[in-house]
Length: 397
Image 1 (cartoon, rainbow, N blue to C red):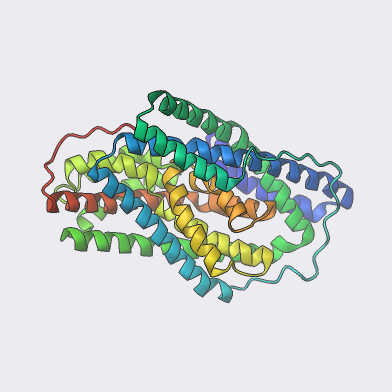
Image 2 (cartoon, rainbow, N blue to C red; image 1 turned 30 degrees about the vertical axis):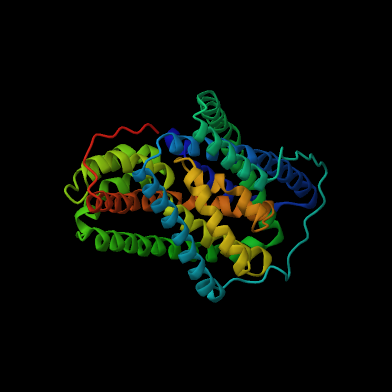
């Protein structure tokens, strides 16, 4: 029971339930406090966003740069291409499917939220895009100059930010979610939109399986190998990922599954590719986030984001996916700045994204891990086509 309580999805679900119940029974005085609490919590989360960007993106670039090689370049291109194409695939599905979902307009017959009784502003140290550019430049410069002290400093900073995420941001999320759903329930929005969330999660799961089929199909054609020789061994890794919701925690099982796939996967490419892709390849999470962002935009703001905004969001999200940590919710946490800065979500939209993403995060992680096998298959094919000799590779991540 204690282990279940520590689970983030369980706490978020509990927050949703409590928030909805309180919102149905709340009066205006109680909502004054809830609105103020939600604002303060959102300020804390928004303050952490630039720090999360720098803490995760810059150290990841230094790790990649310090181990630069032709195979590493191929792996990076494959991971980025898979994430971006998955995002664009999800975007196309969103424009095609979301307008046909039964999404009621938010404009009619909703209560108006009361004013805040207390407002605490906590401005971020820098804008989101400034943090992204700074992260990329610092990471590249440190890798190019082999600045060992800077690289160690960035790694220490990453550990500090990860602790901030795990000990500050994630613990306050259930309260932020509860406050948000309390306001939505008070307004009357959530009772109209809950069936939509269930439909969207089912659509996303189907999207995961379609994307995995495409990935393995492409890998099989490129390598001229039956992809089922790899995919059939990934059952334990898929189930483990559902249970842990963490690519990093599933890595050991994924390695065992990949090792069983010889000769379809070369042993040195498994040692190199699986640990690397567990940290930089998040196609399932990216696919999920894009579709959820479009759905929440339709629910809360009455329309889908325009095409130019979504294309920009997809390409930038691919960069954030490479730098996101392989921990539960890592992708959406690392990309909060894009959700607010590029798509223009407010704290309510951010809370909805965090909630529905967490509810299916285990399946997104399972898609990520299973997709790693397809990319490792492509690495194997590339190495064989270019006569790269098999060797023992150790990569610390």
